[in-house]
Amino acid sequence: MMIVPTYVGPSAIEGVGVFAGEFIPAGTPIWTLDERFDLLLGAAEMLALPPLQKQFVERYGYPHMTREGLTVLEFDHGRFMNHSDTPNTNFTDPETGWAIRDIVAGEELVCNYAEFDPAFIMQPGRMFGAAVSRAAS
Image 1: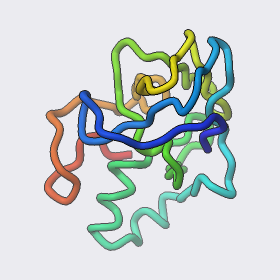
Image 2: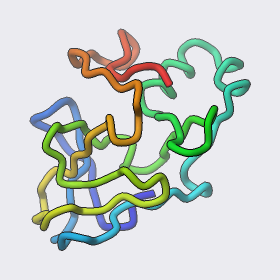
Image 3: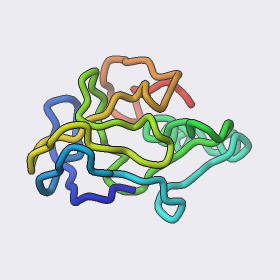
Image 4: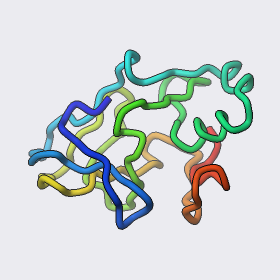
């Protein structure tokens, strides 16, 4: 769950993205895993999903870093965070994401998907429903 003020808006990277609602100093925690807002799906639950819902979870979810077989699906703005090879955040901790430099209000928050999804492969952006843009969990 995002724990700093954010909003979703048009992104120059792809579609929409998550933007800082106010100045975020370097070192500030910006996200925390909160099972009240972040759904954890087991392998059996993933297999039982209808195709369209499974595609949605594969696009917006990611494997939990330390709890094998679980997929995390965020229900807040965090699920719209875009990938960057030069992120302004750090998500190497499975419980907390951090700002790694000062982030000004209105700046897009970006992360490196490979920090928490070892199967991540950058693919050309495609609209949801046509094809997934992240590797399957």
